[in-house]
Structures are given as C-alpha cells and as structure tokens.
Length: 192
Image 1: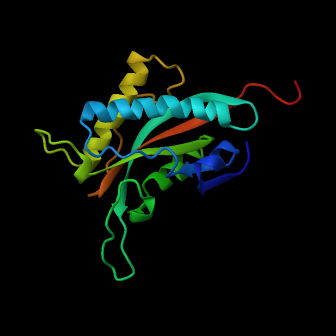
Image 2: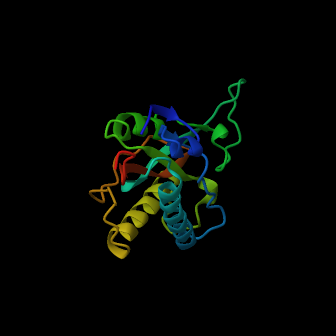
C-alpha cells in the first residue's frame, strides 16, 4: 500500500492511503433499540468488509480487523460556545486525542491500513435503560457485543481483538465512538 496519513476520506483508503476516516460508513443510531443498533452495525461491518475487499486497488483482502471504541468531545465555536453536536457530522466533534490518537499510537504503528468510524454515541441516542448508561459506556457495550458476535457467533478468524478488555476510559467525553480498523494482505502480485 502507499503513504500513511491521518484523517482521510473513505475513497482515499480504497486507493491505498493509510489513515482513519470519519465519514463514509458513519451511521446514526438515533431511535434504535440496543438490539437494532447492534444489527445495524453488524450489517454495516459485513458490507464494509466486502466493500474494502472488492474496491481496494491492487489485489488485497482483509487479513484482520479490530472492533474498538474511543470518544469525542463537543467542539467550540469562535466565541467559545459549544457547537450543536450532530452524531453524523464530524465537523461538530472535537477528536481530542480520541480516535486520532488511537490511529497514530496503535494502528499506524501496527501497520494497519485503515480505520473507519461506524457510529458515535451522544447521550440523546442512547435508549432508555435501567442503569442510566452514559455515552462512553454505551459505546463499550456496543463494542463488546460486536466483538462477541464476530468471535463466537460468526467465528470470523480475521477478528484481531485478542481479549474482551474494555480498555481505558476518557474523562467525561461528550460521546463514545465505535470503529473498525483493518489490515490488508496482498492476494496476488503484478509479478505473478
């Protein structure tokens, strides 16, 4: 593949740019139950994995993928007020060493090819629940259920998660975030 960057568009990933993408496969989970949110994210992951395999230039397939979570904060305007946070508009988010640091400090160093954000979880999209779970814990719940699905139900050997450890938590994030990071392997070479 080609150059490593940070923030890029989904089409750039397909052309071989290494980086993370906030748009392209971003879904809103608004008005969805937890089970419906999981089903939507599973469907999107299945479609995303096929799309990457079919559209990546140069004869590559998914070697492994990792499902993870991170966080975002609410962005300030020039007048130091908070912008209205919109779950499908990354321009209203402040990454604040969330997914951007995860890419830079983990996945880029482990030679992953891309990271695609699947959803964010601000408080207003979280279904009513007995524990009054906040944005970050909701993202952890989604992440864990997806990992379990691909580990046990689908038995997908490409799953790169090595534990059910939920990792560290940010201090008072505005929203959680769920992503899929992937590493490609060449399936044929132009010299074959």
